[in-house]
Amino acid sequence: MLFFVSASIGAPINFAQAKKLASLIYSPTTKSFYCGCDISWQSKKAVLDLTSCGYQVRKNTDRANRVEWEHVMPAYHFGHQRQCWQNGGRKNCVKTDSVFRAMEADLYNLKPAIGEVNGDRSNYRFSMLPSAAAQHGACAIKVDFKQKVFEPSANIRGDIARIYFYMADKYNLSLSHSQQKLMLAWHKLDPVTAEESQLNQRIAKDMQHNNPFVSGEKEWYLGYQNSGYGVVIAD
Image 1: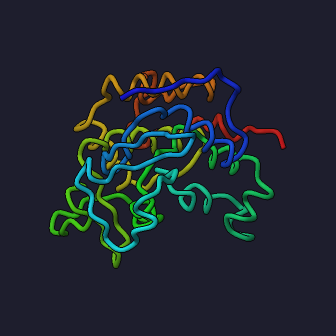
Image 2 (image 1 turned 90 degrees about the vertical axis):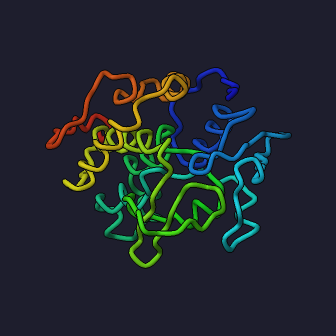
């Protein structure tokens, strides 16, 4: 995987800026997060090659052929824990809450994904679906739309866990006991790779700090006490 790294301009202040920075971090070539399809940037536009990973469109052809920036921890998960969400949802949070804007723009939580997969994942919780059938060709994900559950492929489960640990710790977000147990298992079964570590360092050039659960500076455990260092943001 190749990356083009621009000069650091600091952490993004909103989602729109974050998407532009993420495009630079992941270009000129990368793979979609959930399915591993090839993505290339041509004239600043992300182009998907669905055949490269055997992806089959489930329902929405237009969305399946575009790249979208996926919040691995959904905006609903980190947003509904803020008062702004209770008083007007995501739009109100974007307008009134600087901490929410920082969470929404956090580059560690953003991944390039096939648009249809981003839509199918929605804000569903991660879990295992051993009896579910695949719905997206060779892409190793499963979705239970009735139960609102999404099973990611085995090779990115640890990445997801370490993103959840990071977001919870930085922004003082709650994770249920069952979520923590699942993420700890995924973290153990899918340890940090050299590629994940290199990406962590590249993102750190803009964020100006790394994900300590990738670098090994911090380790999650059941009952972990969040530091909450990301909630102290001046309006």
